Image (cartoon, rainbow, N blue to C red):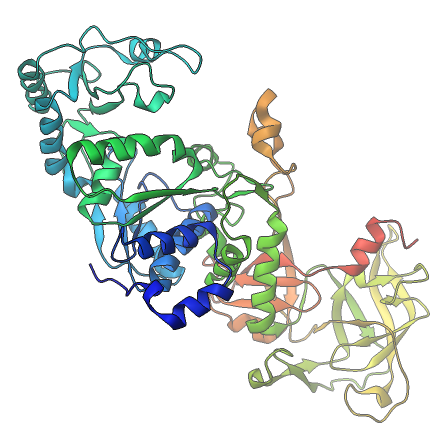
Length: 573
C-alpha cells in the first residue's frame, strides 16, 4: 500500500492543520497517524450489489475517496457480495458506472467473494481454538435465546460441542449435507453481554443459492459482520468508515480481528444521509420500482444516482452538496432544498440559456411587416462571457407562456396585461390592445403592437418597462415534450409519517406532469444528457427517450420564482 508521510513531522503541514477546520474523522485520522498506529491512509467503499446507489451512498463515496486523496492514500472499491439471493451483476456494473460518473476511481477492485476460502479457513481457526461452534437452533429459536436489551441471553444447547465435533459439522455444512437453515456457525463470546451483537453472533448460514460470481461453488455464506472486518484486514485498510448503525457492531469488528490475531483497522462511524421528501431504504426503493410507482431505478423522481443523473443533476453539484452538508456524529434530516440549491448553483454557471414556452398562447404583432423575420442576438450564458451569443428568429406571430398574460392584473403584476406593456427578451417593447377568445371565454390570441424604437440593446429609446418575458417565433418553433418532475412525496418524512400506514400513502400524485412546449430552434439540437436553462422557467436536461423528431426534456429544478412566492404569501392581489 502506498502511504503518505506523517503530517505531524512536517512543519508546513502542522501550520496548515492548525488553521484548517477538520471534521471529527479527519481529526481521528491525524491523531492515529501522529501516534504511529498506521503508516498511511487506506479506505474503502464497500457497497452490497443488491440495488442501485442513491444520494446517501454519494456521501460515503465522497468521504472515503476524498480522505484517501487528501492524505495521499488509497481507496478500494469492494463489493460486499455475501448474500446471493439479492445480488446481481447488473448492480455491480451500475455501481461502477455511478462511482466513475461522480468523478472517482478506485485503486483496487475487490469482492468479498474473493475471500470466501480465507474466511472459511479463519472460521476453522476459531472452531479449533474454541471460539466458534455449530448451532442447530432455527432463526426463531436463536432470536429467543438471544434475550433482549433488558434481559441476558441463554446459552444455546449446542454451545458446548467439542471443537472436533464442530469442525466435522462445519465441513459437512460446506459439503452441502444439510438443508437451508438447518445449522449455523456462531462465534462463542458472551450471551450476557449488554451489547446484543456480542451474544454469540452468527458467522455462517446455509444457502443453496447460486452466487453471481462463484455459481454453486459454495452453499454456506458468511454474514456481514464476519466478512466485513476480515476483508478490511486482508486489504490492509487503515480506516473503516461506516454509518452510525454499525457503531454497536464495532466491538464485534474488533473482537474478530483481535481473536484471529490479524491486522485490526480502526472503524469510525458517521451519520448517514437522510433527506426530506424521499426514502433512502433500498427495500422501499425496490418496492417503488417493482410495483410500478416509478418507471425504473433511473426514474428522475428517485434519489438514485442514475435517477438524479437522468433528471439533470451534475457530478459537480452532488459533490458540492456532500461537501456542504459535511459529516456529523448524530443523525439528522437534510432539507432537499440544499440539494436543489447545489444543482442550481452549478447549472447557473455552466448551462446555456434557451427560450421555451411550456403553456403557449398565440401573440400577434398587428403592426409587424408581413413576412418579415428578424434575427435577435441572444446571450448563451450571462455567467460565462466565453459562451458567446446565438441568433434567434423573431417574427410577427409569437408564442408566450399563458401565465405571462392577464386581462385584468393586480397592481404588482409586471408581465403582459391588456392595456399594458412588456419587453420581449432580446427584442422589443410591446403594447397589448386586444384579445381574441373562444366560445368559452378562453383567450386564444393576444393582439399587440411593437415599438420599433425599443430594440433591445440599441440605446435608441428612453422608454423603460418593468417587465420582461420570453417568447418563441411561431413560424420557427419546435415541438417538444417536457416532463415536469416534482418531489415524490407530499410530506417531509414519509418514513415517519407512515408509522400508522404505508409510506406509499404519501406519494405525490403531481410528482410528474407533462407539457407540450414550443421552443426556439436551438433546443432541437440538444443531445441526450445535456443541461440547459429554459429562461425564466428552470433548468432542464434532454432525456434519453429523445428522438431526432421528438425531443424530451426533464425538469431538473425550477428557478426561484419571486412572483410565485409573493402570491403564495398573499402579498399580491
